[in-house]
Length: 346
Image (cartoon, rainbow, N blue to C red; front, top):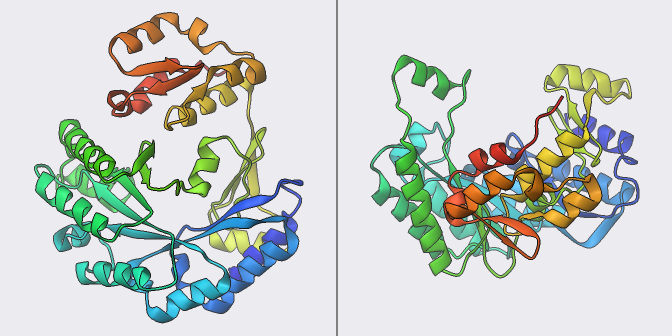
């Protein structure tokens, strides 16, 4: 698989044209299981065949059970300078409920090892909305994470999708969905506490201090081009999206024949408008109304006057210097607001 991803990097080296790379993100699956040689092979291929900025952020998604003193040294040696750690919770029963491999003690040890290593930039992922009436556990998770002073914290509401283990359990009544009211209360507390500790809320699920935005995710929200390699990876060149085949064996077979197995979707003007609204509203930068007019010939306010007036009256949005922004109250129902402002596609 690693050899094939290296091969795809060579096949796709003209995808981003001359745009320099400022973010490399090794994620999906469990990339922290890669051997030092495998990880170095991937990164060396990128540096040798792409124009890479000197200050590029190189992030590796890591699970607590894979964090050792030796692995941290190997990550640094390979060129990784940022870790995204999937803690999810420090509460042992929740880790078992979420079917996580690591234990609560391992979660603590992994962060302590990172803090005591040469890594200066790391992020912690936490999940809320796991069980009803568990605000005290959520508060404890947040306060525990904050003790380690990570540069970045992501807080995600647990979602249950069909055709997954949780989805089947939900259908059989083995688990219950957490109410929107309870999830909102947990999110509100996270927002209050993280702001109190000087973390900037720069995207609905993401907080950072001292300007440590995730370059990877911020690129998505700011409509930047990106290349994804490997099975199931997505790429975007501002005009088209392409999706690699998810099946490992089909992917490997195609790459060995020097073909990238992907499906391409050409984005219509309506698609571009809707994506700009959906991604922009999630961030502190909001939707730039001037950009929508100049680039896509779309006047968001004029086309949605009644909706905009209603949202503004309900204190869900605000407009500052031609930027349409969600208030914190609006962020609680961001998807609903985005849907109201989007236009129909043919």
